[in-house]
Structures are given as C-alpha cells and as structure tokens.
Image (tube, rainbow, N blue to C red; front, side, top):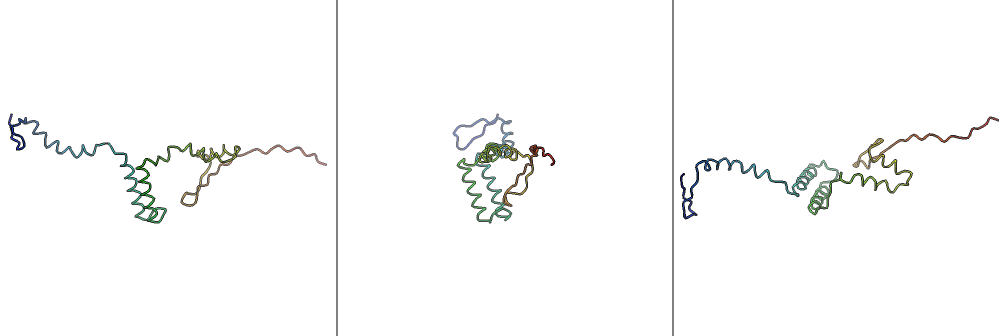
Length: 148
C-alpha cells in the first residue's frame, strides 16, 4: 500500500490502489447524481411559468403581452404560496356547484351535460362553451276528441 502526503495533514495517509482507480469514475458520476436529486416543490411552478412566459413573448397567448406576463407572474407567486391547485382535482365538486343554482327539475340534465353527455361547441376564448343535451319526452296523452 502506498502512502501519500497531503499538505494539510501532518501524518501520511495510506490510500489503497483500487480506491485511487475509482476516483476518476466517481468524478464522472457526480453530475449524474446531482441530476437525480428529487425535484423541489417550486420546480414545477417555475417550469410552468417559463412555458407561459414563452407563450406570452411569442404573442400566441390569448391576451396582450403585458397582461399575459403579469398573469404568468401572478400565477407563479400564487403557486409559491400554495394557493394554486390542480384544476382537475375538484372537477366533480365544481360541476355540482355550477348546477346547484338551477331549479331542481333541471339539475339532472345539467349534471349530465357537465359529465360529457350530449354535445359541446364553442371555446372559452370565443366567449364560452355551449353544452347541449337533447332529451325526448313523450307528449302527454290528450283527451280524445269526439267528432261532431
């Protein structure tokens, strides 16, 4: 076993030859290990902000550039405060709330439309989404009219 003197140590330290051979391999693996660290909670929000900012700067967003950048920054700040949630998380709850304001007789059809039954046309950017569900209701039987 060879010994090597380290200037900051006063005593010689034995370093086995096989360990010295691993030093270059470990040096090559260090960047890979750094990338394998778990993502921080703010990383996803930062990545989403960068994507939204790129859309704003390209001019393809639904708003003018200044408003788009302001909204993207506000969304980033809110997500850092844990104020933003996944929009798909409470979809069923939102559907029930949306239909709650309707008369009881219409709520069933509203919930059916919200769950994807029927047809949908339009877009949010175009002013709204029109959901339509056609239900065939048989006519009430009319009293028989006797010919005169």
